Image (cartoon, rainbow, N blue to C red; front, side, top):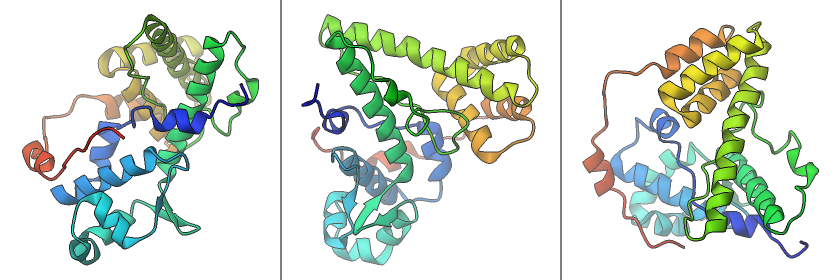
Length: 244
């Protein structure tokens, strides 16, 4: 167990992309700026430290734009989403996501070894909760190779659904919603929008401190008129490389 490195294991997992949140945060970005932002996040994800050097030359290179273009326009826009910490650029949201995935891969490793999960991993400092404003759930492993992997992915799916209900009921209960009604509401939201969108709405309601979370979440999950960005233009601005 001592040789297991959860950070290294996490770096080899898919980098989660919550499309609804990403689109809400980036409507003002041009296509090449969206591509640069995504490429930097991916470069951070594959590093065990989940960061990237604060160096304009290296940032331009990983963003696949010229240093001149990075300095003149793209860099200043992308830096608005990031923070500098000891000479490294970090994304607080991505680090929260990374912590949650590391927790999951550690639990999965323990299950495969026949050990009980380390209870310390359930600390509120790393576990996702709608009561922690910046916390997010994670996307499930996507490695359908062996039967063991499929079993683990199924177990994680059950755990995630339970997480949505348990934390959602607790959160709504703080605002006077009885547990039975809260479970019915969460079940309705899940059926309408899925686990991920429901969890994100609960998290956002907590983060924003809304006074009437039931009506706020219902409105947030209500299907909206189609208003899609120019996906062709966005994809033209993104050059996906090989998996690192």
